Length: 91
Image (cartoon, rainbow, N blue to C red; front, side, top):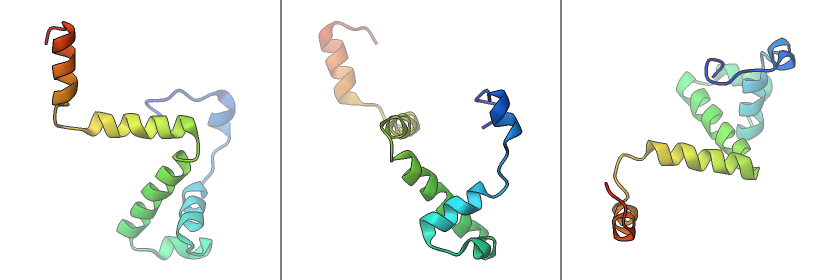
């Protein structure tokens, strides 16, 4: 993520080595000292879900998640295309 988002000076200097473990522990209920014992695939699943749950807590986070969902869609929104064409848009 660092290559996509510029960090401020204070963000570059404050690095947390265990924040992902803490997020997984809080989300899953697994003890913090046992998170690293999880199978890797389960850890990654919990980490993803913890991130989504955390982002869902704010309006900005939900908007970001909606944008992520929208750009992952691979099928055309035919209804929106039809409305655009009916409005006079050119595809």
